[in-house]
Length: 497
Image: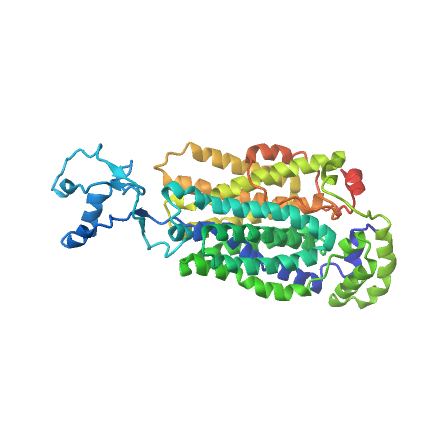
């Protein structure tokens, strides 16, 4: 009996405990989509133009409509169809009000928006953009919010991955729930752009702690044959979360309220997370056999297998014999097989994240309601992940990973050659690309958890950037894990792969 499978036999395989455990761990996924994609709505950019000059004489022009005033004070942009967002005339151009005016205004002097901006409130009531005027010369600060958040995600993957191996998955996960609840709600009360960015960075760290340790606790408490189904179905929670986010954002349309609504539920999750059992595998490999036995006894009782409790002691002792006292990030590259796996996975994570967020974080460019686009992008994940479930089960992880990345890259490349006027086709191709990258995410989450021994830190799972087609080549060099037992140590990895 293998070290991986004996726990499954003794605690009852995939029983009542695993159902409750997986359900409770998966529910926060409804809100993880909200965190990663929150900037689409919290920092949405409404239509805007320069405010009219704070000139008392304007207030006497009550006989002119708002459209006429805009025509006199605000030039058109380079397309000639919409108002310029960042400039206004230094002097009003009254001649433009004349019927069939052909006045040459190409050399008329303009200036910046000295009196601020006027924002359209039909799509968003308030956003960080309208709050802190993150437009024109300050528009890069809008993207900076998401960059800082993702920096927090990367930092959290490094920091909390290491802490989880030292203090346990359960402890770090519980803390991450609390951190996101407190700091996420605190971000809604931010009085300045700088404070908001700092709190979003720390929230990003908490998100990594939640995702990485939830994945570890899922994988380490379920049978080998159930990993594919559990991993794929669990990713559907994230998909549903994308559609929930669209509904909440459409209903609230206020960035502070949306920030609170998507973060406050983590107080409830924090409250019930104390029910989780620490990974028996982690306890054993960290020389805590007594605590491991308590967890195993509890799971066996919940699964209706009390007669198995007496059989656990010797099996746990058998596991301890192959354990090692400590590991570091250096072990990801120290040996040949681990080095190959790590380099390939870095490329896969890098490209999958880049392609996914490149599409998901710029939905306003499609010319469709951002709320509708979010629903469409969420809905496309259902068929994509069902397809991933089939390929993962029958073709294996490696083929599925390479195919998803290659097809996503192919679709994105194809969109380059579609004229901008054919917006429907461009949107359709973007949706297909989003579907393939979502399937790639589903695959790489499962693949990473299976390739690494559980005593090593999880690879930072939300590193972004890279190219999807190139990464599909790296995926081909990964060993297959379909129906294989999880490796417990580095020597297991070297022996198998």
